[in-house]
Picture 1: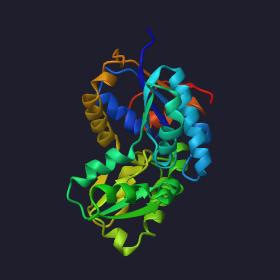
Picture 2 (picture 1 turned 90 degrees about the vertical axis):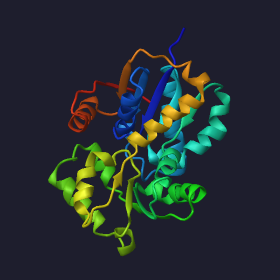
Picture 3 (picture 1 turned 135 degrees about the vertical axis):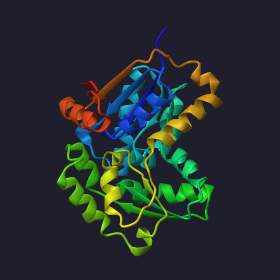
Picture 4 (picture 1 turned 45 degrees about the horizontal axis):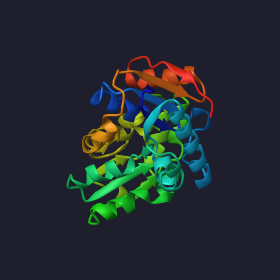
Length: 271
């Protein structure tokens, strides 16, 4: 009998911030991680590219025995997930793909904030996915989206923790409008941004809570599996984890180890 695993797909290594939070929350579940580092970043990709690249990642994970896939990339969740769910997945009975946007918005909407600044890629900002989802759940919250187009490429290049990265974060955040600077919460709406969370925090003049998505998505997945025991019962639980990237495994290992503090053994994949 083939093991059914949880798959994670991201444009690069940023999705590790989600998969590792899930590892802590659901340590027994078998997982497979795939980062499309050879074609990262996704933030400036056209809609058709986002759909095709993300679907290629899903198909690859299906072949690895993943029944449930978390699209751990905001650009792909915003620009590709709906089309994949509506037009691609019906031909693959039993396979499911979930994103990171809805669970993030659901959680933040409960916390009493009135002005949320969403830092994201250009693709996520252009999609207006976050303002749209917040409006559905709590329309009283002012949602402002600000794209940070250079951050993902720098993180993927191993620049997190360097002066170049700190300078870029400071430069980008200096362009915020006065209303954006007066936000009472900041959402890192890209799974790469937790790698530079300290730099983002230091660049703000006032103390504002900053939220990344790992713990929020992990909590949502735990609840999803509780509500869908028929899915949870079909997933294998041997604590096995596998990690793949389409680009340099060596570079991915270094970035992951710098952030997580322990070795992640990446292998090569081809899409």
